[in-house]
Amino acid sequence: MRLTLLFLLLFQFANAQRTDSEVYTYSPGVTFTVVRITHAKTTEYGNGMDGRRYIAPSGMHFKGAILEFKNDSGENVIIDFEQVFLIDSKGEKHKVESVVQSMKVTNTLEKLRQKLKAGKEKMFIVDFWPAFSKEDMVTKMIVNGQEVIFSYR
Image (tube, rainbow, N blue to C red):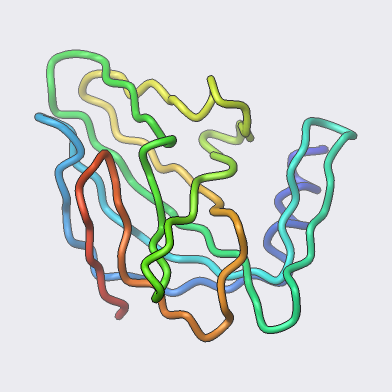
C-alpha cells in the first residue's frame, strides 16, 4: 500500500518522452535501451514513513529515465548505477539518486548496484539529482564509462 502511494506521489505531476529504441552495450553480453526520459516538478526520497518530498525550484524539473537491461551472457552481472549519469546541456553530470526495480525503491549506495541474472531482462526507473532547467532537452548519458546519445520520437 505504501509503495502504491509512493508511486502515485512520484508520478502525479510527471510526464515522459519516449526515446528511440536504440540498443547500447553495457558490458560484454549485456545490452540496454533508454525507453523514456521522465520530467516531474516533485520527487520523493526516503525509507517507509521517513520519505521527504522535494519540489524543484521555479523553472526547474527533476528528470528520470526508464532503462531496460538484457543479460545474454552466461553469468550474473551487477548493474552499477553509480556509473550512470544524465548530462545536461551545459555538460554537467547528474547522478542517480534512486533506483526502482520490481517495486523495490532503493537509494542507498549498496542498492545502487543491482544484480541482473543470466538470461534475464529487467526494467529500472532511475531518478537523477539535482534538478534540471525545464527547457533542457537532455539527449546524453554516460553509462558505465560510455557516452550514450539518444533522440526523442
